[in-house]
Structure formats: structure tokens, C-alpha cells
Image 1 (cartoon, helix red, strand yellow):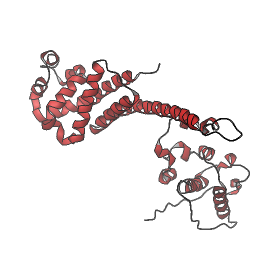
Image 2 (cartoon, rainbow, N blue to C red):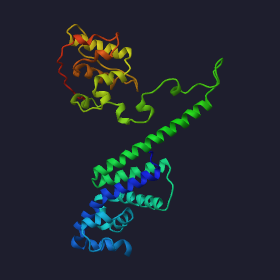
Image 3 (tube, helix red, strand yellow):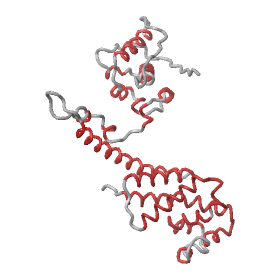
Image 4 (cartoon, rainbow, N blue to C red):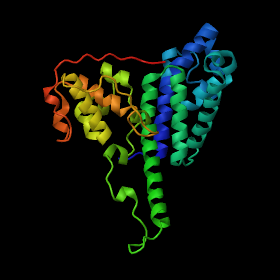
Length: 303
């Protein structure tokens, strides 16, 4: 069942309390020693304080909620938390207090509000080294971003169809390109990271790159082999087979051409893959099966 924006805010606040409360307790104890309970008492009303007065730290962690935790942090911020969290942490805390109040009073959250709130939660959790909780909140954040992406895409398709000029002798308005070609599912659904569009060649060498760059079959399935790319691979195949080929190749490309990343990545796949990925290349590419089965790759970085 799909979660509403309020559901995501609710789960996010629960995770914030889970990740933040141990840090708050630790810092209060470090600053006030055995008198940390008085710092708590000074920020909570009688009803809320009755939950934690004379209680152990474990009981505090089990009973404190987002409202109480945020108030305790806010009231003790300058004395206890400012040195580590700084002004940005104070701003994040203030924003989350407003989010919690809006949520508690039945307020509504659109996608942009939810994305902003979840992003702030992630940042504050990371600031206190609450990695597991930050990652869980980040999953909700990614899903909201996917929904925003899909919503923007639908609006853009409608706008393009509405504003497309008429083609002489053809139908009224040009079809959007997404209705002519079918993008990969991860692009169509927004499940991608911007960093995936540029390979880190060092990660390819050391075997830690994303699957679309590390797996040779997946790489060549997603990479369109231009004439220049085929020529580059053919030259490398000839050179590695001892049948000619230029020993030094200078890649030249205009902005966005892709060869500055995909060219070297393709060569790395050619040199590092075992077996060679000829099965996924068409007949216009060189016969990679005849290449030697062991190729040494030496990375050099020019300043």
C-alpha cells in the first residue's frame, strides 16, 4: 500500500527520534553528569517530565518523543550542542520543530514539503552519525523525489503536446519524444542517480563501479556504439593482437559527446573482461575472441 506524505513524515520523525535520542542523552550526560535530568526538566512541562524524572537513560530513550526531544535540544543548544552541530544544525532543528508541529496539528504536506522535510531529517541524522536511521529516511526521500520527477514529466508532456507547432501536411502537433521511443525503465521511473551518468574509471579498474559500468554485458547493452567507438575498439583489438593499431590514441569530443568517459570505459571493459563481451556486440565490431586472455591495465592520471 502506497504511503501518503503524512505517513512518510510520521515515519521520518520516528526515525529521527530513534537516531537522535542516544546522541542527545550522551551529550547531556557529558555536559551535566548526573544532573542531566535537570536539563530535561527545565524544558518539559510537568506531564512530559513525569515520564523521565528519576528515570534511567534507557527509560528516557524509550519514552521521549519528537516534541520533547526537540524542545530539550533547543533549550540546551548553546551549552551542549552548538559546538558539534553549529548554526546549520540549529536551523535544521528549527525546521523540524515546525514540521513536527504542522504534522501534529493535522497539517497537509505536498510532495515538495515532504521532500524538504525528509532531506532535513537526513542531514541532521548524518550530523550526529546516525547512519542506519539516515539511510532509512533517505529511502523515503528517494521515493518522493521519484514521484516529483514523474509528476514533472507528466506536466512537461502535456505542455509539449499543447504547444507543439503543427507540421505541414501532418497531424496537429508533434508527438513528445517519450511517446516515440521507450526509455529504459530506470530512466522512465526516475530510479537513477546523476552520478551514474559519468563513470569513475578508477572504480571500474578496482571492480567497485555501478553494474552498468562494471558488468561488460550491461555496459555494452546500455552504450550506443557510434562509428567512433567502434573504431576505437577495433584499434585496441588490433594493437592487443599484435596486428597493428595505433599505440597512442587521443580522444577528441565536443561537450556531451560521451567519449571522454564512455570511450575509456569501453576500453577498460575490453581489457578487463573475461570472457570478452563479444556476444553483446554486433557484427560491425572487431572479433574480440581472438584477443589475449590476460591484459595488464595501468591507470595514469595527468595533472
